[in-house]
Length: 105
Image (cartoon, rainbow, N blue to C red; front, side, top):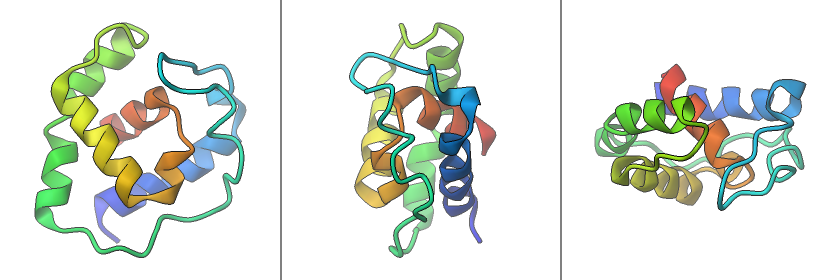
């Protein structure tokens, strides 16, 4: 299992737990990640270029998490858009949850 798929699977587990229940950022709804948390990532394949988009967003994700969502870099925005297009689990996750998942890779 590649890292991106693993991270999205972990995200599904995180979304069900209380640790992220209060996570809310601009542009995301607080309860969106908790609905349907048991679904798995989509069956689309992941290319090295796909993973590169997410890996390049680590610094932006760190800034986003450290500032409680006040700093949103272009690479993080690209990675969030990519993850939501590719994985059904990511569509229901908040920006903060996805940024934390990017950092966990």
